[in-house]
Image (cartoon, rainbow, N blue to C red):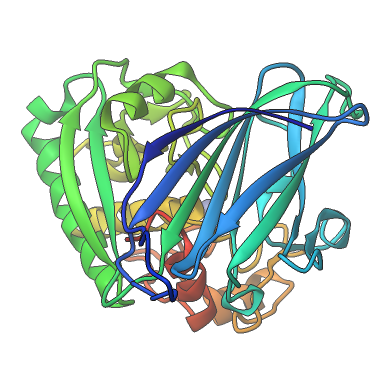
Length: 366
Ligand SMILES: [Zn+2]
């Protein structure tokens, strides 16, 4: 491994010159950009210097050639805290960092409360640079961003910027419904102890917005301008799909400008064929925003709609058939689809303690 120039982007919340470590919980994030090169076997060792204040870190890797997967986490005693081989065949999903299907790979650590707490010292995240067939490729350059968050004091909050595609902010029906839905989403998160700091901007892009999970340069440029928190892009549809309510750029998503740095939401699918919003449609729009940003913050569906894959959390109910899963989990914010009868949908606003734990460990919460 060769370590390139180390550029300090933001420094905040660090104590210097104190003889004894003093823990300051201010939720500040320190960002470091590293230019690294993998060894002959394609192994990339990413150093993370965790200090006394830190309670979570995020590693975002971007390839310059081929693809790149995150493979594991070593603590300061060189004990393996996360190994991709324990999870790659599992039916339980912990993080998408292992999957080298996109040009960025994002790991937030710890993922769950039970994976922590962080101990101060030199941690290592292991990654692999891969060729186009997925085999290790040595001596490959990679851009790595490390975010370290100081522990939180009090209620955490998340900066959310809602970006309207195609001058939709000038459409009073759409912008009024989106703002009402965002306020309702803020209530849903607030009930779980997380505050939203909502902002609104206009994005000069086409109303048929791209899939952030596939990746698109539109998300790179929008995020580069906004530069913090989670960006939710409101479009008429997502990639032309007639049944896609919304999509997140990753589980979890990145906090640096990349083609995956956003959440896409279709307003038209929520409004329905009359293109006007009822109160129930605004509620579903609010829950879609909360659901997709839940993915961006690291939450999986408690059960996938194939009924044979689950999240890695101990307190979300297990089920394996439509009836049983709707009975057990239809009210969960992360249920894979809205559950609706003839006249109304089941409110999907519940989160388990373990789900809230994942959200609170995401470095985007300050
Ligand atoms: Zn989902």
